[in-house]
Amino acid sequence: MLTLEYLPFLFFIIALFYSSVGFGGGSSYLALMSLFLTDFHEIRSTALLLNICVVSIGTFLFIRSKVFDIKSFWPFLVSSIPVAYLGAQLRLSQQAFFLVLGSALILSGLAMLLRYIKTRPVSREFSLPAKIGLGGSVGLLAGVSGIGGGIFLSPTLNLLNWASPRTIAALASVFILVNSIAGLVGLTVANTFTIDLDLTWKLILGVVLGGSIGSYLSNKKFNLRILGGLTAVLVIYVGLRLVLMHGFGINI
Image (cartoon, rainbow, N blue to C red; front, side, top):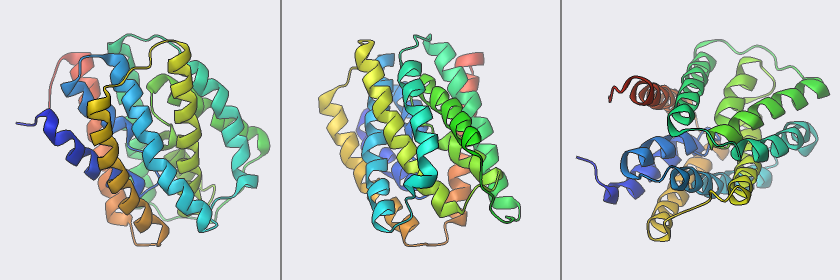
């Protein structure tokens, strides 16, 4: 049976999987912590903090490898930050929160699987209003759900063939970073930011190690098709588990 002592190792594995495709892992951190922690606000606060630790590494590496393109990315970011901040201040019940998160994760995971199944056509550019609208919509969902939002944005952009997978992964990484920071600020303003320092530093160590390895693999252009597919399955499982547990009382 899993105990609290196993969390740093489990978070290392999650960070490795998620960072390899440009994500932070906040959704799975939330799901796992909900099994061990009772303070709902502590769960959200810790997940956002861990997100920041993981994607900071990936963002740095993407910038260094010149995949980061601020000219293409800024409309997604400027529209998402304020609504992520406001969304984080909404006071949902724990049940409503996990149902919203779980449903969004199931759809996101399915979109991720479709990305690996279908043949990719030529990339296409979006108009400025389309980027702003998509960034704002995902930013609001990120703030409400308590995660960075890249796990929603990336599959959407891949299905719409916006750019190459590495470019989308770079955008997802920085998108998660800025919106996780905005979310933490929103929680602080709403006086709902709380963490257990003794546990958090151990979790940070686990996700930094896992995130470093995953980000390295992603930036070195390894074939991440299998790892990405497994990550999609993990996302669907986490979402399904949250919906069944908090909507129907079924634990799987």
